Image (cartoon, rainbow, N blue to C red; front, top):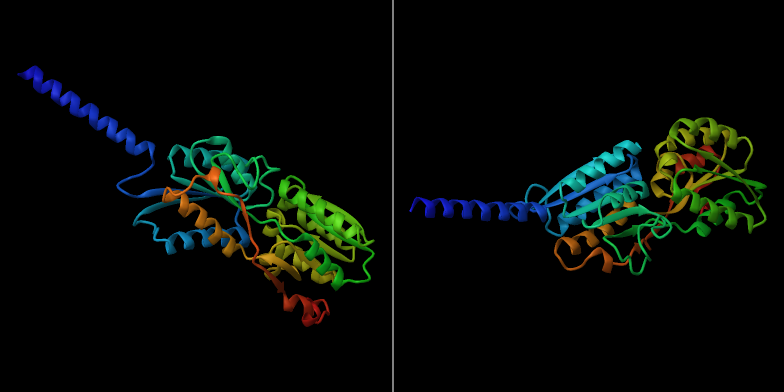
Amino acid sequence: MKKNVLKGLVGLAAIGLLVGCGNKDNGSNEGIQKVGILQYMEHKSLDKAREGFIAELKDAGYEEGKNIDIDSLNSQGDQANLKSMSEKLVKEKSDVILTIATPAAISVATETTGIPIIFTAVTDAVSAGLVESNEKPGKNITGTSDMVPIDKQTNLLLSIVPDAKTIGIIYNSSEENSVIQAKLAKEAIEKKGVKVKESTVTSTNDVQQVMTALAGEVDGVYIPTDNTLANTMSTVGEIAKNKKLPIVTGAAEDVKVGALATYGIDYEKLGRQTGKLAVKILKGDATPADLAVETSTDLELVVNKDMAKALGIDPSTIK
């Protein structure tokens, strides 16, 4: 009799353990799904992308504390932080992990091939090795690209300084996305018969010195969507203002804090677009392998009127 009771208790305990393991494996806790977020660094464009993503989840009925648990981390551009935070989100068995900017996407993708990953603010996911193709990602990762209309942006810059002899391009040489965009911008500008001077930085500490030197040698500056430059755009803008130098950037948010103008992406809308992909995965309607990488088609002309006036340019002539 006692043996039978004991066997029964052992059996119930075993079942309990199995159920417990099952819940842990799918990352769910009483109907609450886990969403991990890893942002590469803090600046307005990436912040807006994160805010748009969370807003889209909320509009779709996913509200933090109610039916999802969001763990939002920011590596502040530190590689060691990226790795430890990626490991944490994977260890916590998130149902979906949002990665913001290419270094964050690569870091999390290195840690897991099983958990669905959604990226945003990644310029070229194929070159970064994140997906097999934009049309058919093929793995556990997909998302939205922030590839900008470089031809349109460089044409805008050249229309502001039609007599320019040399255009400067400044970017972080260790950011793969920036390297790709700088190459495309250089080709586009040189096709117009204008020389290009490239200057690169490796961290925010380099920006003031490199930008000051570049500003004395060029007639205008193009800056791609670059996390390091975005993080120091107010400093870059002050140098440009003192040198009466127009800057066209890849991101609209950069214009608001120091550049002159751009045809750029609204990162909040891009974040919302990314959120729609995540909702499909959370609802079990799709897997990342089946969801094509999307780009933003919602571009806007953004002009910093205060900067234009400081440079002696009529804002209404920028178009």
